[in-house]
Image (tube, rainbow, N blue to C red):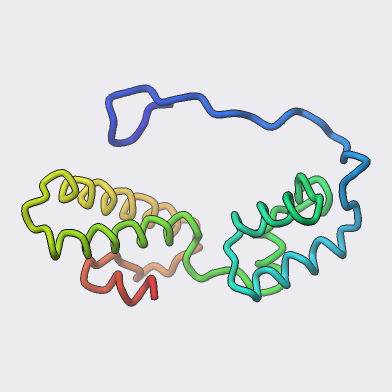
Length: 151
């Protein structure tokens, strides 16, 4: 698949090995994994960071194989999921950093273009999340309001 804002075809990414069974050395108790996920989310970690902590510190290579659900699904069941999806929040943080940079460097044309591309990605992914019902239908991206959304 091609990249959105690039004329190139992109790089292929790595894939997980096709193992249906859980390794012998891993933590296999789904209830303990769920409590770990909820504890880590209360500390303010994102789902990606929770997965990394579970993998590196608690010997859980794949939460989906242990619990049968993704980390975000477990958080949604317990009403701990974020209001704005994580990928959209990351784009909003990038846009905020670019806006802050452009306030002090007004002639930086390259980053001005990157801000335009990032804002277009935000609008595109927001349109998807609105159609899926994960964002309210009146949600709009506004460059002046992005600081309030991220904070």
